[in-house]
Image: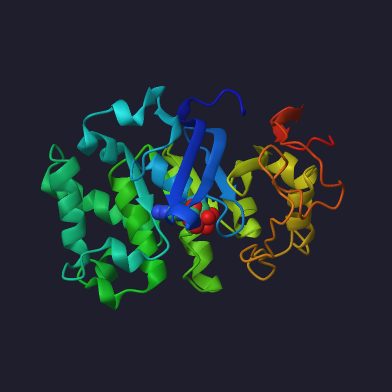
Length: 319
Ligand SMILES: Nc1ncnc2c1ncn2[C@@H]1O[C@H](COP(=O)(O)OP(=O)(O)O)[C@@H](O)[C@H]1O
Ligand SMILES: [Mg+2]
């Protein structure tokens, strides 16, 4: 994809099948179906798609919280499941999720959270230098050390906590961050601060997977985008190309719903969660978008991703 970037993390034929139910109610879901992408150093990739499209499952597989049914996640060309040292892995790869409160120990004050980072990952840094670093990263994410360090977790807002988690990732010098819907519990006014904090992590060269169902936020901070529909990639590429020239009918439908891209994004947000989902005529081997597609009959075969211009891929048999 984008050239000249050093590759950091890559999904190769990534697949996850969930089996649920029993006997006659047995249900097999390909939550993630042969997905490929890569994120280079200092790149932000937006993973978008409606609820249930497989975004969190991909995030969990990148974080080694869920094992793929097929394919791999490669970190600098090594399958993460072949890396035996989990402590080292999590010093390089971290996740931030929708609910920031669940990521903290409620009986800790904020300064204890940062002390633990030093103890666990950065023992070599002297305490006085560490305090300077803490102050610096807090400033970077728009927080005041004097204001937050002596507070308990419950004394801070959701937006402040998400920024603390980004500050923590900055202190750890993480190489990969998976951010799964990290602004969805926040109100509009604090979302921007969190996105800006994420950009400071990009600045230190982290590869960031930004999972969202908000296309305006994706456009605001990302370099490239993967559009997921029922576990499959329907379109991907540079964010500029996909947004200026969407080719898949699903992407077109999503983008048509945004009034003006260049206007203030926080007032024109568009959520693509909970759109109507019917899979009445779909059968294995056919295009998954068949029931909603405005440009085809019901016989389109499962398409493969095709390069239609530099840094821009689309999976549609009609193109
Ligand atoms: N542990 C699980 N067991 C069975 N099915 C699951 C499990 N986790 C997710 N799924 C299913 O996988 C699909 C993708 O889910 P998810 O990755 O959470 O989507 P998203 O994050 O895009 O909303 C959904 O159909 C969901 O019901
Ligand atoms: Mg999710």
